[in-house]
Length: 210
Figure 1 (cartoon, rainbow, N blue to C red):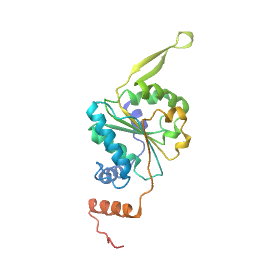
Figure 2 (figure 1 turned 90 degrees about the vertical axis):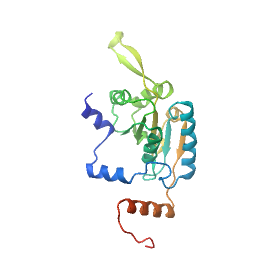
Figure 3 (figure 1 turned 135 degrees about the vertical axis):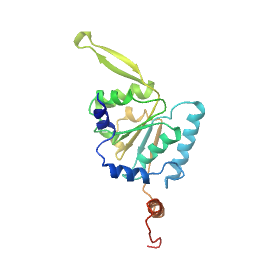
Figure 4 (figure 1 turned 180 degrees about the vertical axis):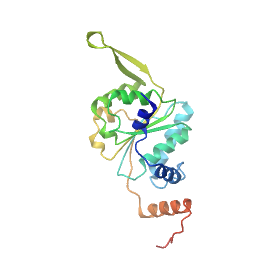
């Protein structure tokens, strides 16, 4: 698979100016992230435990409405481990070959973030089972009666799935996530804080009483 093909799977179509703005405004630490206090506290404990044991964080499933911080939390987790994050979506991973290209480029404690994970096709989903449990990826070598399955080792990483429709995930898939969290809507006060933070970063004057 070429670099351009890999970018298609893991990046998507984002205009450079939009990407720059998104990066500028996105919180990089839990302290900068506004809202979801209980979830943040839980994640801090899980991350600290993983660091002490020298392992990757358990796979995470974040469910909740759009715009409540699922993607941002995935980036913060990668930042906490000082590792890379690969971002993709369920519809973008069309076949197991796409999945293999992503997995073989991951390093220890990297984060693989799959948005709309409920939209993975069932073949790709089932290919993830041994990856999530044993960090092994099964590939078929050969054809017909001579075909055999070769199990490739994968670096221990953290899969973070985001979904707005968790009920669409199969029970076997859902059970493989060690951390399952639901994100709620922001309160009016939290939304105000988010707007003020963004305005300050962009150096835009805003009437706090408005």
